[in-house]
Length: 148
Image (cartoon, rainbow, N blue to C red; front, side, top):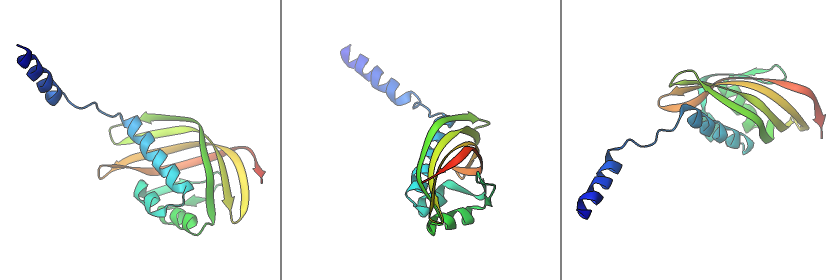
């Protein structure tokens, strides 16, 4: 009888579906990887997390494509020193699209000039070829930057 009970427990573990990770959790994981890669200037990793059709709008109004954003990070024209979330919400639109909103405190160096500021942002993530990619991003600066 005991052997039957053990077999039933093992069978139920094998037959039960694995706990599904939510779209929101998947997107948060991809976004965390993007932020870490950006702070580390890991352009190879950044490239794997950005859509080829990326539209990246900076808080100062500049728009960049994927290649332009990666080139700016590679040349240290734009260096992210810290990217700390104050708020981050993910709203799945479908199984393959999610919208992320929130606020973050950034420390950046742009052409050698160091700034600290808070942004509010809207990011669109899209699953492409089975992986999450940042498809569109727009931020707005809240208040005046602090020059360091």
